[in-house]
Every structure is written in C-alpha cells, then in structure tokens.
Image (tube, rainbow, N blue to C red):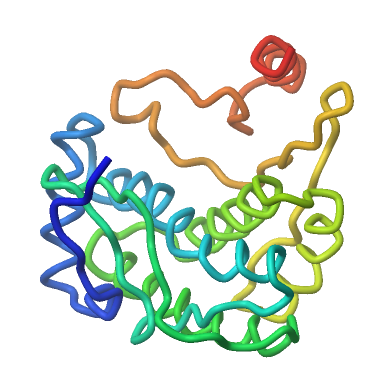
Length: 209
C-alpha cells in the first residue's frame, strides 16, 4: 500500500498532533475512553517506530538511528501507520541504540500519557512487546531473541524484561502488555495476557499450526 502522507516523528512530541491522531483512532477501533484509545494507538505506532532500527541491526549489524528527528512515519489518510524510515545510521552497540531508543520512546510515551491519561508503565510494557515481536520478525529470530533483554535493559524507562516462549517450534512473545482493544468492542488478541493461560495457548496453537 502506498502511503498518503509522510510525517516527521518529531510530531510525537506535539500534544495537539497526538491528541488529534488519538481522537481519530475511534473511527478505526471503536469508541472508548481516551486512555483506551491512547493505548491502542500506541500499540500500533510503537511496532512501526521500533522496526527500522531493529531490522537494520539484524540485517547489517548496524542499527539506524531511532531518534525522532531522524525518523519519518508513513501513514494513510485514515490515520493508520504503514511504516517508518530513519535517515541516518547509528551504531552496532546495543547500549548506544538503547540510549537513543530511550529518548525517543520516553518522549512519545510522555506525550501520549499526558493527552490521553494512558498509564505510562503500561505504554512502556507495550514498547517491550513491540521490540520483542519486531525482533522475531527479522531474518534471524534466534539471534534476535538474545539481543532483546540487553537492549531493553539499556533503554531503561522501567520497561519490563522481554519474554519469549515456544509454541511448538515457533518462538513467540509472551506478552506483558495489553493493547485494550477489547475495551473498544473488539475481540481480544490471540496472545492477549488478559485471558486464561490455557485459552491463550490454545488460540496460539490454532493460529500457528
């Protein structure tokens, strides 16, 4: 899909822009309290925001810079995110990448929490799970899983340690976060932590085969 517009990620520090985007999320996900819509919106955004650095680190050994002034967000007119791009390389050192992620993620989380009332710790947990998922989606998921914990530790921000489990032979993120999509009238995600473990395992096995 071709993006309808590209926006600088520095807008994630702009409360007015973020408030408008979160308000528009009701058209995509259903009407809900502002803190619920803020959490759902961040769940979608965070996966896109962390992707370029993680993908480049695994593919080339050098991460591109996740700093907001280096990142552009590709969007469609209804407010969905198609992807993100960074304009400059950064480092192969997870500590350097973690420090850059820390500033970018803290800025976005602080803005979203301030305009929606979403819980910052819950938003941080979503960021951990987004990092874990994006690492699993790279070309070398086994190596990527080894990088997850050191990277999240370097980011700090009180984010929980990433966790992985295997469903059969397939590694998946054992989520510590909930996107709250069900509070907007939608079904719970297959891997939602707010369901009985046996039900989650059954749904994951059904999805992954």
